[in-house]
Length: 88
Image (cartoon, rainbow, N blue to C red; front, side):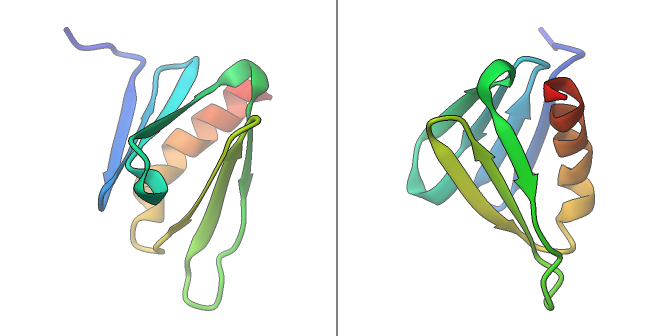
């Protein structure tokens, strides 16, 4: 069954999934997965650096920091914008 609210983006070995409440990041930094609920997460976007990469930091008590290549950012940006809009 498809969830119309689910956004999934796969970049390399990392899968980002967001359903409107929970952001789950699979494969980040060698971990299985990390889950963040919108009620207690923050998202910070840095960059682009001189090579065009952006840092994406998602945290609650846990944290995931990933660098996203310039060519991959257009695919991830809509998911990040939705998360940021939902967490206000």
